[in-house]
Length: 515
Image 1 (cartoon, rainbow, N blue to C red):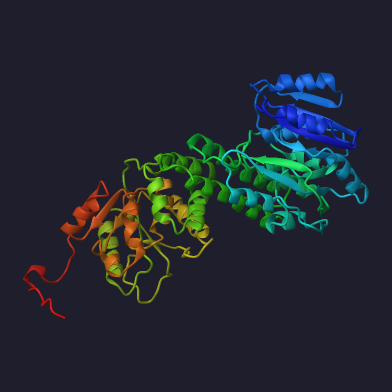
Image 2: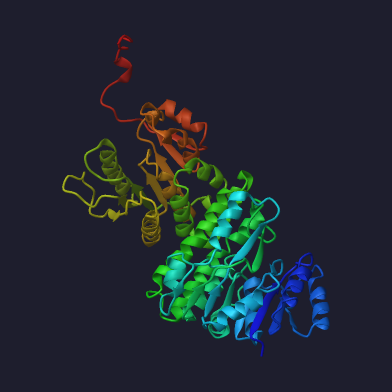
């Protein structure tokens, strides 16, 4: 039984695997085994691995019939490992010659379930300086100890320890317990966090140490870092949504979701943020496809909440990117239930129109659901008792849209809404509501209650975003022929509804231009 098992997942890394194996087998510390798992390579990697195994008995090769993803390969390697400790090395990275010896000495001075040591991050390809520095800072060890019962909260929820698997050595017993709980589902992104999260659940102690870099991580060789992702690559990124579901299933299975709620929430936040930032980095031609992938992997509530929270100041870019997404297409349907939204139902012209509209709709045989942000008030305009009222959280501060999205999505489903008529036409948060409603399969009508240039008159920056937002709507209702013409430049379906004013505007003479 070796003291240290080095587990190497191998998949189509023929260019690098020889250097990786050489760096491991040349260790000055000899009490190691090398469990190398070929994950269905097709580029000659497995032949290289077989050659090394034939020449050095410390190499334990495992050949998987088909590609199951790096998480599955690491799991199989950890299960086969015989060492007291496990060190993961990617198939395109290397170890310093004395890495295993230094690690063994560190462990001999005090047993610990998780030991983190320094790494050297080397940029390859088009990795920028800022990205390199950020990753180097991210993998720098937390210099201190963390004891039993606090590992998930301290390492994940409070971001004290990077969640990558490289640059760390793991006690075999808790790692094997974690592997026993891991799904065999194919995971290509977020797999480090998945295995790390489960390991921390079973581990009891952490220590971070300083010194020289023992592991060289080549940023840009794999799927992480470097080149801007295209549509196909981004779809792999979105697989991180599966990791969140798997972590939740694990916690529920062990009755620990409430106890580990902070760590679970942070893991979800981290992975969703990775996907959202990758989406906005796509070329514009790939963003519609990417939006569909984001919604498909995360669901409408999480996808739109992530966009709203991280890209709240980039609404035009988000709206332009989402335009043309299949998940926002509205199929023709019979309308039986109409939902309508405004902030409140009192003290204003729009509110009075909504009161009248609900009466008209009810008289035409529709069911009506009224969404507001204010609860019912004594000064509200009247609505019939048969109108269902749903009060939404405001969701207008960073990180708050998720609660609003969950409430809105649940109410749309609960009441079988077939159409949303949205009256908050100058609401800077209308985009997020629209994306949530439409990605829930409900058509969306924007009801504009004044002239299109209203916000321009007041110097509001939302004016330049409105065309991009409005063209996502299934229809726009305008109050004048001029506005119908204006919105028609951006939107396919614009209808003019005469504003019920109480005077003839053509009878009013032009005022003096002086003053």
